[in-house]
Image (tube, rainbow, N blue to C red; front, side, top):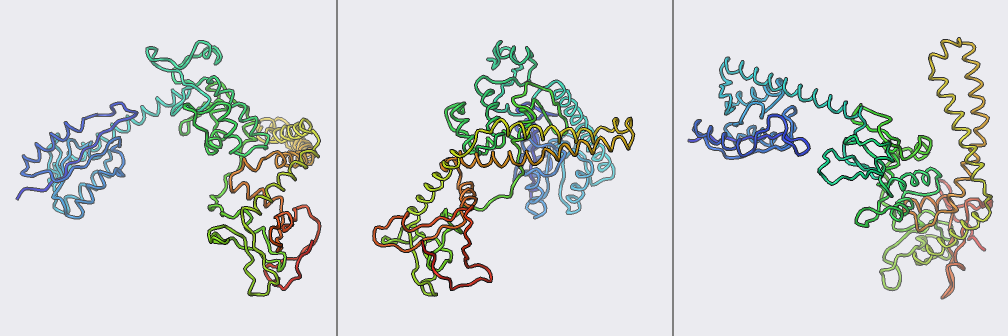
Length: 495
């Protein structure tokens, strides 16, 4: 009975170019089939790993082959060369030992060794060691090439929005005009980034807008689409905007792993603006509720929260908010169509925002100065603390006095900075259109501006303005509501 053998093929390619020891799949397949016939076997399954290094064992085809061997679905494997199987001495020897311990076949067309003998095991160890050494050489050469590229200011990876990359081949249609090259300082080093017309200035302005704190990611994406739409005219996404604002490439940096060049190309923003655009990563939120006022809307008769229902109304298919305590003591349970009350509340929010905006003084310049002064003082403290040489020269006592002076100046400027941030946040809320906000952000806005929305029953045709009372966050009235350890009954809220 013929041996059931699996054929394993591995091809290494990097960036579409032929990589180390490239042997085409067709050549490997022919050699494996011929050697299988010599061994009195037949190939019953093929496993092919493209663009995978032999230095790891997490290759999908490789793992599929090992699984078949472990399950006894094959009598052994054949590879073109031992380095196609593995470039790790430890991993390769361990796996071959497991194969031989199950009395299965391991064969390599090129080396033609028998690892069941001590001589064969010695040769296998040598071939695997050579393969691992060659991989180490490749890795070292690759790291050296990347270090040299980063030092020369070359960007590795996709070209960021706002830049163009200098083409390495003059015969190809170039992306860099003489004007653009001159604007970048005249440099035409292949792989270097230069600002792209229209998109570069748009990214610069995007950072300016984001740094004010007035615009959310959705509004910024909308503005970017108007200023410099994606090629083809498609809109930019808020997630793309957030990724750009985190990108240090716009500070003129290029980075690859631990390699960094902080002065590689023309920056599209300043460190100060970039810093202001950063925000702490937050946890993934749950999907937003279809009911915008969930947790805010209450029945005025019993003061308990009203729940949202998607199957209300006369047609049984209209979303509504309804009091659920009709049979549990509510004297006059309220029901209102969700679209009607949500539209009313959003209109009231926008009207209130407009009033806040009209009441604001134009203190943008003073606020910017207050924030900038604090930032400079804080930066002075950080720089002073980090300057070990100054501390050694000044002496500990003098250095401590200098530190106290700088910290005191920073603390003196802190209240003005905080006041400026509050005013900027107030203007931000006043200038944000509810149409610009995503569902989560809109919920946050409502929760920040509103304590409760009370609903009372009304006659036929009564509008939401007659039935709803919005209690704003700055309302100083004390109205008691049910909560943990505070059960009703309560008197109805009247107005």
